[in-house]
Image 1 (spheres, helix red, strand yellow):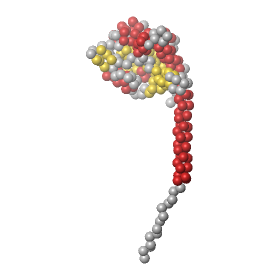
Image 2 (spheres, helix red, strand yellow; image 1 turned 180 degrees about the vertical axis):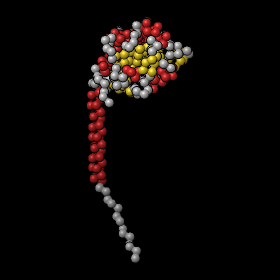
Image 3 (cartoon, one colour; image 1 turned 90 degrees about the horizontal axis):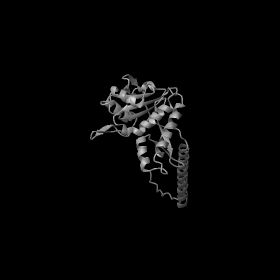
Image 4 (tube, rainbow, N blue to C red; image 1 turned 45 degrees about the vertical axis):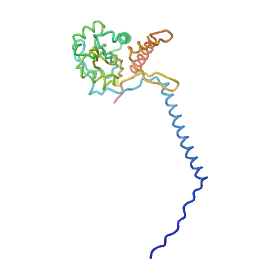
Length: 256
């Protein structure tokens, strides 16, 4: 026997209850959003007041570059693990392209002359035309001696890939109209092979990373002097670089 179909009345929704529920849900969403935003601002403020150098990647021990140095000996950046060093891509044959960077490196060499755990590595972007014999000549001009200050060269392709893919430089070295185009910023490597950068406080709540490009800093300072001082920007950037180096030199190797 077929069961008779029951007549179902549609549910009657109480508009007042619906409005109350909607208001409650909206209030919860707003409160959650405000809470997240406040937490973000607090985090940003803590970060802005923290001058600890930031991490920008890490060198893989299997990808560390092997080079030829100014005394024609073979060197391996992997051998510097546990030490602190800076890497500066340069074109030795064009000293004007890195004159301000050179001055900074010379001051670093003097400042840390007694530190056996600090090194400077100048890596030529044109190894084909700047082989070890040439590097020996440039080393005399710079008074760059091993093991403190390396003048290094390797295969062009290896160097350029290392700079772009490993150090994450902004420009892949290349020629335009016969002129080398490359990113000459100084890079700091800590004892654990981390790439470190300084941080600059932009406001009470936010900070940003600083790029140690001293040629750009000198050009900017010349066009935008601070209180008439064209070298203020460069000096501040150098002070920040020294701060980063001092910070990582004070840290021991992390046990892994």
